Length: 302
Image (cartoon, rainbow, N blue to C red):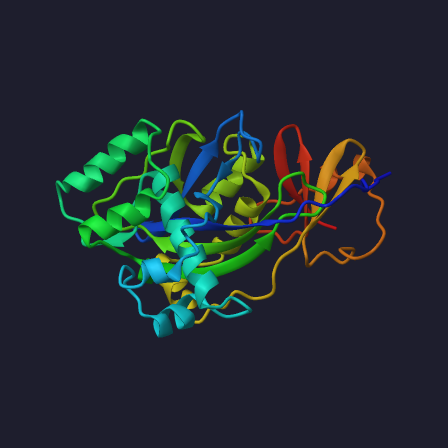
């Protein structure tokens, strides 16, 4: 039997996530960070860098002249589907800020080898002492421009209503700049790895790389691209698409997340937990549900 709990639904906070990508031996790889076991949101799971938008991210008047795209190109590249210029800039700036804070990579132009300001920011990051508004202060004092041109639309996710913390998140694909190196922040994230989508999915099923639900879905979608070049080509015309709002129910004591394309997403449902083990699918096989069991989110067919 499954029963959805009835309680006040928290309003989702606007947030951004960046799927950092690179090519290695012509193969596509993505960067994953393992969240701290003490985290309140998917503890111990591997995720992409990201987080909530803050007040300074949503200030287009401040960022004007400090972005590498003009307003028309920002709308064309990152807007659409009810995402206007102000929100497009806010989500992009937030994604760039969070990528540095969590993964140590700054998506910006004008950086030089041995840049003293960047070295100081990295030192402050490692010491967990970045000041509020650090990104704005840095670009204002250096002339750096945030590289919105390195971001592309991927997906719009909204956390299921049954979860205690909810986010309204834009997932961007980001291209790893040359000369940069990813490092976890050793606070919110404890380790980081570059991995192909196929290897990440396979390792999740083995319990070696436990993926968060949206990370698992994203890797499943990315593994359909045979090369980095093929992905880049697809991103040229990719739109945000309809917001993805999964639904979480219980199967016995285990959570099950129905994806928006599940045939029962809007129907009353009862899931027999005894059938789930035999419903788990392999890498690349279609699925519409994620079952949390034994500390791992597992893809299962309806």
